[in-house]
Length: 157
Image (cartoon, rainbow, N blue to C red):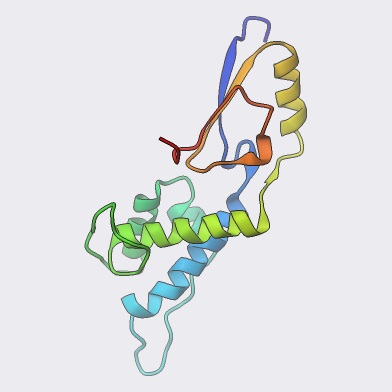
């Protein structure tokens, strides 16, 4: 590590333990939209989103739009793509992605997010050795404030 001058980290799942909140946001979104995508037949309700198996197999590690498409395909459903300007909802792939992101953001603001136990000491050690650290994220994350040389949140111009 003596020659190391800079490190760029991903936040989700690397610096911050966000998987439980992300899975909960996917579940909330999917369970809310499922009745619109798969109307009940003979009183049977659509099977709820499995926040362990379906999260792991269909949406974890994918971009939001890809996760929506994978989940819809697994449930034999389809939606029009829509546009990035679509408001959160259930009618288009973009609307569902926006709804999921809205639910995730609310959960982070309400419940917060924790760093993994070894993150702060590791970042502090790199800082003491003058290794510049940056994190890449789609969210503004204050949990690591002061420990990184830069934070790209994707929200600010």
